[in-house]
Amino acid sequence: MLQRLSTVFRKPMFWHGTHHHDSNDATKRLFDTVSSTVKGIQQINYVVEHNPNLTAEEKSKMKQFLIYRYDPADENDFPKYVSYYVDLKKIPPMYLDALLYIKDNYDSSLSLRRSCREGICGSCSMNCNGLHKLACIHAIDTDLTQPAYITPLGHMFVVKDLVVDMTNFYTQYKTIDPYLKRKTPKEGNKEYIQSVEDRKLLDGLYECVLCACCSTSCPSYWWHPDRYLGPAVLMQAYRWIVDSRDEYTDERLEKLAEDVKVEDCQNIGMCSFTCPKGLDPQRSMNHLMKLIEEYKERKIASATL
Image 1 (cartoon, rainbow, N blue to C red):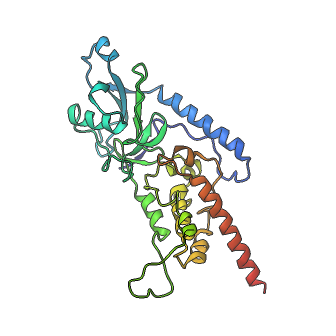
Image 2 (tube, rainbow, N blue to C red; image 1 turned 135 degrees about the horizontal axis):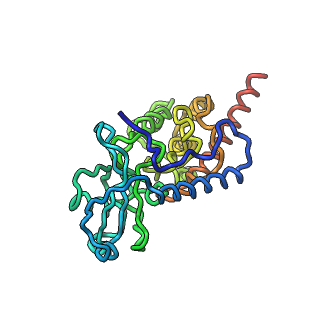
Image 3 (cartoon, rainbow, N blue to C red; image 1 turned 180 degrees about the vertical axis):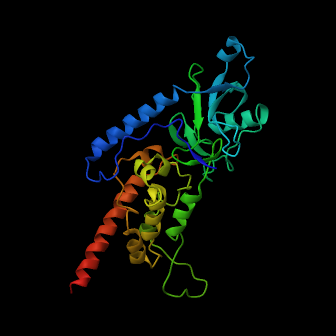
């Protein structure tokens, strides 16, 4: 049985159906919610000390990591934070380094995803001190007086500890046909040539590693991830729409115009704020929505001829 991560995050202060509220007000509510989230994390209900024998003096020289632990498959388990103390002098500076040190030296039962350790694969996305980041490229706060909080991506079903179920996210990604689609046959082994200008349109789009940090930080995605595709998937949809080599532009726009696949974006901007790769999904979605609107107008105009 899977369980949504709800012990840390308070219910977001956004209301379904408020599509026309002022974006500045929405942004303020978003950051108020983030602030409330951090305060909620600081008032943890249940903490288990991994090593209760550490003295206060020993703890003062190490960094405390409070890590969310829970195995839904174990009916006797329950959501909690486990407290680990790590000597930062013994590890490299990133959150993932601390997690691997803890797993290798303290507790091998800790579950997490990781692979490249270079911010390329997107596997180690998680919540680090209130923000969704890639643990392998997010530096640890070296202030020993403040604990570091590590939890799974918010508003996702927890498989175990820091591992969340990404099935819905990847299924949505598949629906946008994330590959080059052509109508004209390819001539031999020739490449599809792009101009320098057309190639530049893909900068800031192709670098996405599908870590889902932006989508899981998006209040609109929190409300109905079953229908709204979210910023990560929509930015990749835009990436193929603006690719000059693709010949299914209108078909892609037609598909995205259905239901609330795009239009539920509230322009809050948390997606761009949290992106660990420094990309700007909000800007891409604004461009995408404009293209969809232009497509609808062209469709109406052609129907009236």
